[in-house]
Length: 149
Image (cartoon, rainbow, N blue to C red; front, side, top):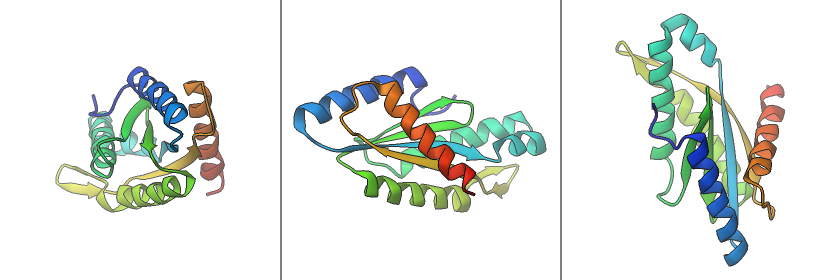
């Protein structure tokens, strides 16, 4: 439905990146996004609007990244972003930039711009060899941020 990788494709990208980072000793960072208030978009505007919002989020994330980065929709209203040759600080800066873009760009439905929100978890590659473990750590970091709001 979105131009982002599906979960399986994103896990494959994570695995390739981990192998590359290990071999070439380069950093990478993983961002985990959970949309804030997404259920309200579906409830207020309908499921077609919710689908349009998910597509808009995927396009916005892809539009704010480099060719070497990867974006995946993990399911529901959760996305992940993988940045090669970037560390924790670059990941945090990108998360701030994307959070602002969600608010300002949002998505357009029936001619009206609707702001969106999201909580990001950021986790740098730390020698991970299991993609699911790295993803779980980024998800946990996101929940810390989400509960802190």
